[in-house]
Amino acid sequence: MASTKPRSYRSLKETRRRINNTIAYVILIAGSIVMLIPFAWTISSSLKHPSKLLTFPPEWIPNPVWWQNYRDALHAVPLMRFWLNSFCFSTVIMIIQVATAALAAYAFARMEFPGRDALFLVYLGTMMLPSQVTMIPRFLIVRTLGLIDTYWGVGLPMLIYVLGTFIMRQYFLTVPYELEEAARIDGCTRLQSFWNIMVPLAKPSLSTVAVFSFKNTWNEFLWPLIVLNTYEKYPVQVGLAFFRSQTKTEWELLLAGTIISVIPLVVLFAFSQRFLTRGIAMTGMGGR
Image 1: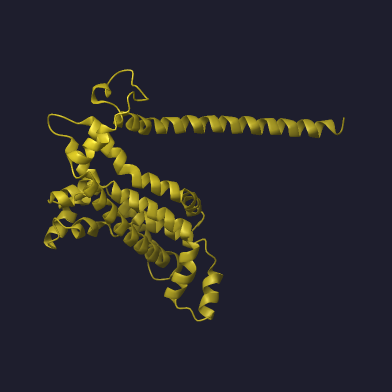
Image 2: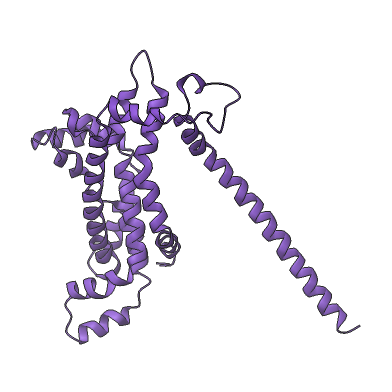
């Protein structure tokens, strides 16, 4: 009898654990399905004949598969030109934002100077400002600098990524100070310590910031539309708007163009998922 009770307790505990895991998996699977439905509908609709696009109930598997929508979308507007503009622009902005975020985060996390914490709070507070509030001041500055209708005018307000700085700072706080002290004893300067020790250790956080930065820049619509005037300079998000007019929206072409436009983001998330998960998990481990 003395040995039956512990076995029964362990069995009950194991049963509860399995039930909790089953419930968690059911909830996660249900949530995943709900999240994927809009994307699945977009793919399905982009492959339908225009006459079947708005039928109800919706036909999830197109019959026949209408690839003509993709060909028409590529010929209706210079979509690949817009796509290439977005790719080049997002890549350059991503590199600059990662660099500035890492340097600023290192200063806020590892360097001592008067008012550091207060300055960091003010820095974070800028995230609370809606972009619409700063839209007019930004436009006036860009116009004063003579950067209207240039990529510099679009990219100048994007060089600083506050959320990226926060993510990097939280990670740098988790790195033991003894590593840097040992490097300084060996003769490393502050910059060498940052580049040779902190940056290699921060690859997951750097990857997270890079993914977020690329996604945000790629999806930017309003600011490029305001600054750019030349048709050939538009990014893909602005280019997709040409499938809509005041009287008509070519939904089949718009959806096909949308699928083409998200390919880089899907590839980026697929290849960086492991680093992305680790980077986000490490963000909250600083504790300071």
